[in-house]
Amino acid sequence: MLVKMSEFFKNLPTKKCVECGKEIEEQHECYGNKCDHCLHVVD
Ligand SMILES: [Zn+2]
Image 1 (tube, rainbow, N blue to C red):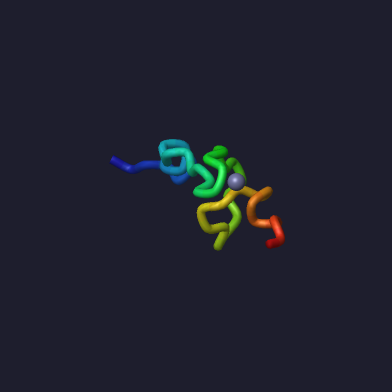
Image 2 (cartoon, rainbow, N blue to C red):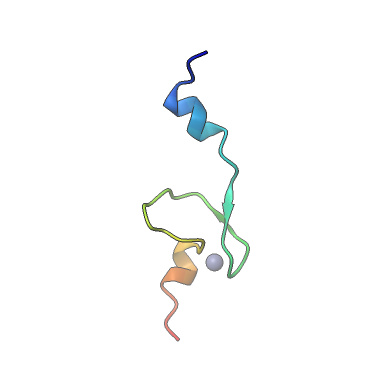
């Protein structure tokens, strides 16, 4: 019962930004739980 890595990632649930709730499509490492927009928001 081998599972290809591509199939494994395909089954991962979609991450959503904790700030705005937008779905996060990018899979950067250490991306946290925020979308690209919210990551670049300067307080
Ligand atoms: Zn966001």
